[in-house]
Amino acid sequence: MQKRVVVTGASSGIGAATVRRFAELGWQTVAVARRADRLAALAAETGAHAIACDVTDEAQVAAMAREVVETGGADALVNNAGGALGTDSVETSSNDDWRWMFEVNVIGLRTVTAALLPVLRDGIRTAEGGSGWASILNLTSTAGLSAYPGGSGYNAAKYAAHAVTEVLRLELAGEPIRVMELAPGLVHTEEFTLNRLRGDAAGAEKPYENVTPLTAEEVAHVLVGAFEQPPHVNQDLIVLRPVAQSSVFHTHRGPLSAKA
Ligand SMILES: NC(=O)c1ccc[n+]([C@@H]2O[C@H](COP(=O)([O-])OP(=O)(O)OC[C@H]3O[C@@H](n4cnc5c(N)ncnc54)[C@H](OP(=O)(O)O)[C@@H]3O)[C@@H](O)[C@H]2O)c1
Image (tube, rainbow, N blue to C red; front, side, top):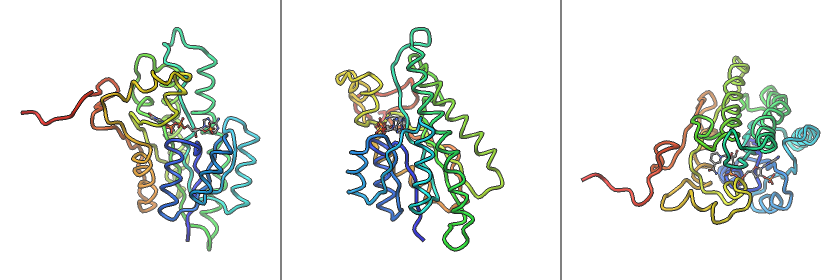
């Protein structure tokens, strides 16, 4: 039976690459984000079912969940929609930025999860069509595991998303639903740092200078690989960094070479 996955934040970067990878491996995909034009292009390319939805709007999320049911249900969910705004300190950052980051990275993740859990359970229970298992993966970040100066609201939001993932795994104990987390380090996507720096294109390239970061496609391969494991295999937390980045504080710039 063909499995069906809902991917949020599918209009760019890691989310779009994740939809492409699932589709390559024969999954049915539902691509969710706010920008309908980008989703339409991805749908034309991959066969995804596109649903324009702001994950911070509860009514839109409820409508999205209904559309998922009406178009075939779901066995899997990737909560990927998210982002960072600003690099200011705790002292100088703005509450509006913090609110935006908490809305999308934490509360949006919770809203989508709550709306789709009944849909995932229906998929499990439907004896003939259902797979008997369901999977959820939350895309957090190494910023949710290690704080750094200027991380402030993004650190706080991703730590919270990490905590939500752990709580959910405990609360779903006894159900055939795996709850996984992927925490990437430096990934070069088109929009993530550009949005964080409010459109400063030159500044947005700096983190990727003289280093080979991860690509969205590389993250997507590992992410989808977790769903391709036998369904009882739960990769609780996958931390994924480029070799040159041994921690949030240690990024080697320049060529890598073996010690003499
Ligand atoms: N790039 C990195 O270095 C990195 C590292 C670790 C973790 N991450 C995390 O990985 C995820 C994807 O990052 P990325 O690099 O692929 O960034 P990206 O290209 O900026 O993608 C973010 C996605 O989230 C969607 N989104 C934002 N707000 C939304 C909302 N309110 N409702 C629905 N969708 C929303 C955006 O689509 P619309 O604008 O069309 O809604 C977009 O598709 C994020 O959670 C990010 O925090 C990124």
